[in-house]
Length: 82
Image 1 (cartoon, helix red, strand yellow):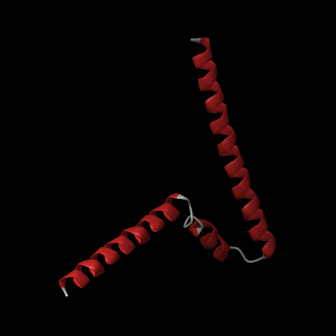
Image 2: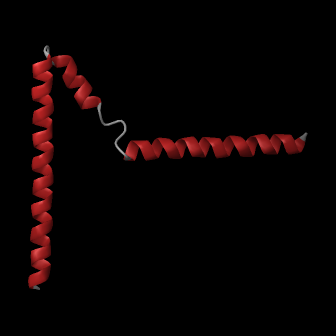
Image 3: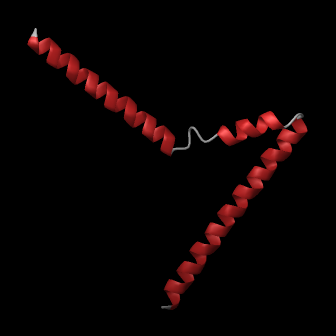
C-alpha cells in the first residue's frame, strides 16, 4: 500500500514538471504572443484593413531586424579596428 502511494506521488510530480516545462518552452518560443494581433482584429472592420495592419506589423518587424543587424555590424567593425 505504501509503495503504491510513493509510485503515484512520483508519477504525479514527474507529469507536473513535464507539463510545466512544456508550458515554459511554449511561452519562451512565442506561442502565446498573438494577443496583439487578435485584439487589433477586433478594431478593424474589413479584410483590407486587417491586411494593411498585418503589412504594417511586418514592416515594423523588418525595420527592427534591420536596426539590430546594423548594430551588430557596427560592433563587429569596432572589434575589428581594435
